Every structure is written in C-alpha cells, then in structure tokens.
Image (cartoon, rainbow, N blue to C red; front, side, top):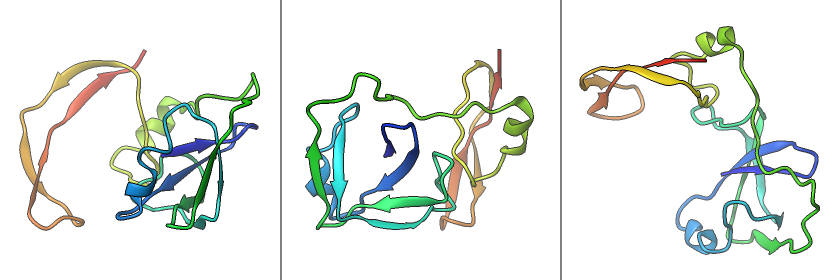
Length: 132
C-alpha cells in the first residue's frame, strides 16, 4: 500500500502473511490513520511504487488509529510526473513502479517467457500505449 502524510511525502508499506489478517479490515483506501510500532527497512528492489529509499513493514505489534478530524487540505494522492525520456529509461526496469496514462494502440498475442524470479514459464503480452 502507498501511504502519504500531511506534507505530501509518500512511502509504501507491506503487510506480510499471516499479519495481513490483522489489518485487512482496519485500513481502508482513502482513510487517514496514525501508525506506530512498525519496521522501517530499505525499499524492495522489485516493487517500488513511490520514490523513497525506505518502506514500512507492519508487524503483529503495529498499532492503527483512525484520524477522525482530517485536515481539509490533506493530500489524497501520491504521484510524480515523468517525462517521455524518463518513461523510456524505465522500460524493463523493476527499480520503480510506473503507471502510464495513454491510449492502447496494439496488444500482442500471449507468449511464454522464463524469468529469473519464478521457476517455470510466465505468460507475457506486449501492450503498446500512445501517450497524449
């Protein structure tokens, strides 16, 4: 999950099983919370949805308190705009998760590929997007 603070700083957090069962009904998208008693570690190199070198990991001791009096200017979204050159440099890179808004112009047939992370074949499809 991606977390954002009142100043717009963002960090991502992960909740690993079996601890995920403790939080799945307590943290809702769009809610504002105070978290305490969590671990801070280096960001995962294979999943980095925001530009931050660190991430949070919830533990069974993590406390969650919902904030009821949310400041009116509290930011709702975390994003950073990338240039066309930055997007090109991110192709086939796992260093940062990248979302693109555009129009799909072509979709290939599915094929199989062998990856370093998984044992066995993975299905792959190429999607071509034209950006505005």
